[in-house]
Every structure is written in structure tokens, then in C-alpha cells.
Image (cartoon, rainbow, N blue to C red; front, side, top):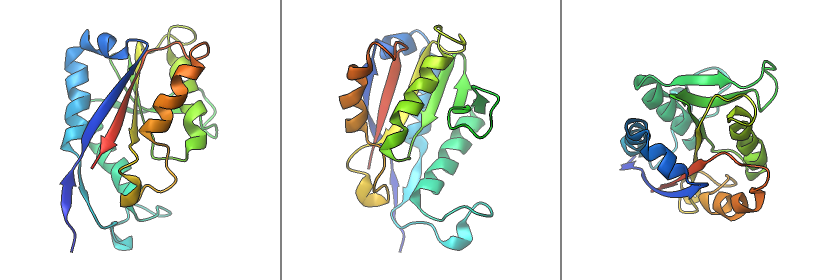
Length: 178
């Protein structure tokens, strides 16, 4: 039997990201509403529930679909291109609206640097497309629910301050809690 649960979250503000988002309060509230609206099942979805050919069943694809649906419902542009190379992992960011870029990361921790560089490349220092980045990742409490091996909130907030000279764009990190 599947049981549904609602996500909660914790946050970390890097380089005054929360203050920047407070100046865009409607956008900040939308992001918080997206996270709060996600309902998950404790059991992974079945293979027949898979959204398309080649998609693995499980919690991560389910989460990605739920976030995509919620952001798009609110008018966010999905898969905003950073570069023209479609094969590059830095080629796109998940969502963009009103100079706010959002990356939802349920990937391996080795993608941390690439994800953070996307925010930097989109910022005033290069492409001037965003004022702030939002990085949505699971916390340590979620790995027992299908996120084994994923990048975690704790790892992001541990390493982000060490990248201060390279990552100068404000980033609001959201850690998903069960």
C-alpha cells in the first residue's frame, strides 16, 4: 500500500540570496508553494506508471515530473538554455522566471560543481540572465526514501562557502525534508 506524504523544506542563503528573493517576494512565494505542493508516495512508482520510453521508474523521476508540472503550471520556462550544445550538462537550467533560475537536483554529488557553474554563467558576470539562483536538493533524511547516492543539502552548504571566489551569484539552497 502506498502512503502519500507532503514535502517540507529547510533553506540556506548564500551571498544574501534570501534578501534578493525577498525583493521578488511573489517569486519566492511561488517557489515555496511549489515545494509545499509536492505530494509523494512512500513506495516507488510502478514500471507501468513511467512517463515515457527509457524512463526508469522510481522516486527521482516521479519527483522531477512533479516539480516540472508545478513550475510550468505557474508559468516558469522549463529547460532554459545556457549554451547551444544540447549534449553538455551545462547546456540548460531546469526553470527560469523573472531573472530567477531554478535547478532541481536529484543527481549524484559529482554534479554539484556543474550545477553551481550554471548559476554563475547565467549571472551578471557572464550572460546576465539571473539575479539569483535557487538550488533544490534532498536532505539526508530523504535518501532512505529512494534518494541513495544523491547530492544532499548538507553537502551543498558544506562546500558552497569554499567556492566563494568562483561562485559569486546569490544562491538560495532548499533542502527537501520528508
